[in-house]
Length: 245
Image (tube, rainbow, N blue to C red; front, top):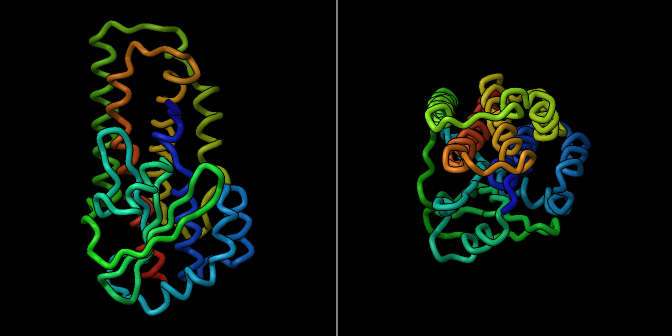
């Protein structure tokens, strides 16, 4: 199992860059550069279609673009059994949901490992997202991390490597943050992404880099909260972009 795909997806930053661009807060050249760094070159050819789809969407507080992530025991928040849900599950990288002027229509963009993208149109309501605020998502992630640490301590687990994984964790956190975020991203969203990156880096350090699986149950329980934090941060950032324009 690829641990990184469970705790990080390039679609987080892709969604934030696209949202800033759709709201006129970052130029096209900067967006294209970010997409190239994120492996999203396949979107460059459909940027015009993305803008046309989003033009005229009601500014009713719901973000024009949001991120959908899923993992073991958690199906993507897309119509069950549909082609989009199957593609998202198969790709494992997540999906971008773009609103339409028709409130019953959604456009779902899904990448695969080869860098190709599929565009699906859903004409029925999507499952309602959690709509966690950044504060709520941060609190849940913090609580889950604290509980995982308590369980690890109670298990009697000890390793010198776990006590000082700073270099590896720092390197991974830097990787997660590449190519960074647009300047307009709200501070609350950026803080939430940073916390999610650090928790994800700790998980990857222990499981993948140290190849130690004795505390997998404690660490794997954090995955869902890391994904929720990323989805919440994207929704908040894109919603705030809309309020700035």
